[in-house]
Length: 165
Length: 352
Image (tube, rainbow over all chains, first blue to last red; front, side):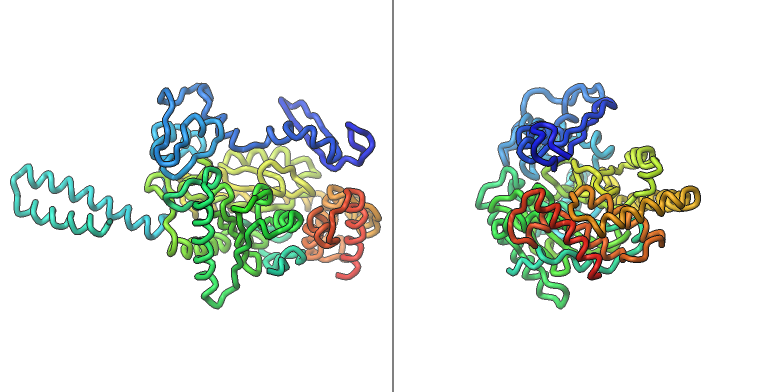
């Protein structure tokens, strides 16, 4: 098969586009394909698909939050994320959380992880959970003036905090 | 580094065949992981990229301390463009990773069952490939490699969101499980267009042979999970396995009904393709893939006995442009490639 454009060189790139059931086929040689590069790349850029999901109006819903937010750790703004579809660092998830949640629901239908937990980071997660429950118990102990129990709890909290550090 | 991988057409893992090999070519598990406290690769500074490199080489040392197969860390800038293309053709790296600059690397296990892309979209992408339908084995191996990394590195992980990734489509488990299937009968009978779109209802996606944005060549499709956050790793893999089993059944039934209802036409088609494949003097990549597909169907149905399934698996890689050129040792024009491809196919089927 010859290239559709120059009709000289053999077509080595075969590109099929289907829009609303309308099929268009392109058969190009490498040189002519170079000129159509924008066309081919644009249609397959996956991050743009994610960016599309963030458009207001997708599924008829506006994402919460107005104005721009910047991740203090890597400096990426939400607007930049919205146009590239890529986050800058792990902390972005936390700083963009309010807008992240509806997005994750759109992509995965879920927002909470239930799979594997890394042994070490997971250990820290467990300690953090324990710390939180000890602290709330301490407050209760102080409220009912059980100072013996409160002292006990305070020592355990101190020990745990040392461990975390 | 001898860059042996570039000249070896079939990864060791491919040689064995595997369960459901008449329909399933391979099973792949990919885990996306990032290191805590570093920007993701697309925003990362030079020093951070080096830090990922150093950490990885430490882990590679640990992986190699056992008696098992050895791992090798290969910086991408030590590979020629053609060698990179071969890695893509063997499904060891993504097409994007092949365009890498100096910051990227790949870790290969000697049997090529494990490949780890360093500083692709995420800091680490651990991949395991097995022949046939063996998702459980691939997941177990990927978890084992992941555990070794985790002994030395701190991952970006949140209790609520799981493993944090550059693209929110991978967050949670960071898991992408995929199965490469050969569905000639479903395509021939026109059922593929009806069945494959249904798969998306199960949180799965169907793509061409080389993943995202690639077309299906030679009736080979890749089915993978789309949802990575929410279900556990085992649930994701179990769901994929269940749906793929249905697809396998559908393909086998379509093959049997073709045999029953149009045996003459089917035999004619696979034998004509065999005739062309083993005699042609000029073969484009696309034509070769289609012929290999027809002949493979003939072999799987016991119609063609002149060629082995393993030889056809090998051809799936060797007829690709990158591999042809690495073997030739220079860049070939498309026409030269087509002539070489035909020669290579003839030699391969004669010498098997």
